[in-house]
Image 1 (cartoon, rainbow, N blue to C red):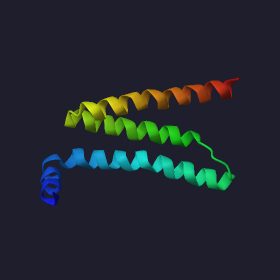
Image 2: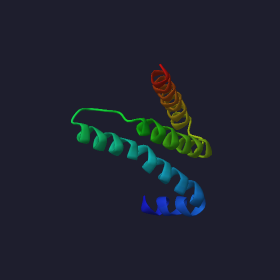
Image 3: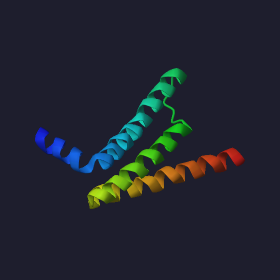
Length: 96
């Protein structure tokens, strides 16, 4: 298994880096949400959560298109719609 990972990373260098960086970005949204919630003492989803979601999802979508993985493509593209929609709703709330 390790040989397969090493071989893939050699063949897909930049793509692998994109996938890993995107995954770290996507995961970091949970860390941000956790830290902010702990500081406030209640569960809270900061706006940065949605921006990190979009950044991570875009990178992972591009990576999944490269990998030609329909399950991954569908999951990231549907999530992306939700993340953008949440930002639109937040913007509307701030304007009212």
